[in-house]
Amino acid sequence: MSIARLQKETLTNLPFYEGRVDLACAFRWTARLNMHEAVANHFSLAVNDDGTRFLMNPNQVHFSRIKASDLIEIDANDPETLSGPNAPDPTAWGLHGAVHRNVPHARCVMHVHSIHATVLASLADSTLPPIDQNSAMFFKRHVVDAHYGGLAFEEEGERCSQLLADPKVKVMVMGNHGVLVIGDTVADAFNRMFYFERAAETYIKALWTGRPLRTLSDAIAEKAASEMDDYPGQAERHLAELKAILDEQEPVYRN
Image (cartoon, rainbow, N blue to C red; front, side, top):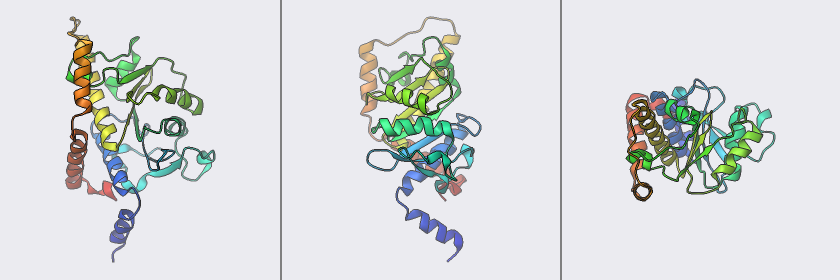
């Protein structure tokens, strides 16, 4: 048996292999969308019931190169995490560790400095108003952190995690920083991150016109958001299609 085949069979027998593949796909597609930030920013996926053990990208590796086997497993309750040979980025530990430790319903956590979400995060009012169907998805489902306190080391991560206590809130606009999105699965979080960036882009470009905005009523915005909450299978199909493309173009992401 070839080394490559043995490695692949060994990897596919590991627990949560499909979660690793989903996460590797999300990293690579985020880079294709130019929503990454050099070798910074991080995604994580819980692998135990209470969410305190999670997979995350290794320190300082470009999103476009990440493979399923590259992901490191971290214990949010282990104070020695940063002293190990495969220690994560300290800010990733601070932010993602705190969210996974304190917000058990946040199974997948994605944090980026994507352009339009970060422009939104830089406005005096960083709330995303419901001006179209995409932005209506996030009506009363996002929170704004207006108290940026520096890099997301442990204290800042703990503070930010407290803003996600309400299970209805799936997006945190991190004022003067970027955006953090949570979900039940990789597909759920990635789909939400994608649409939030699209919605922020529409809003920012609408502001550029200088003309009055046609904002949806609260009733219609909530109706649209609830309908999207219950829309079956869209996030899963989105990620499945992206994996199908990567399977054809760069299947190494599964290794």
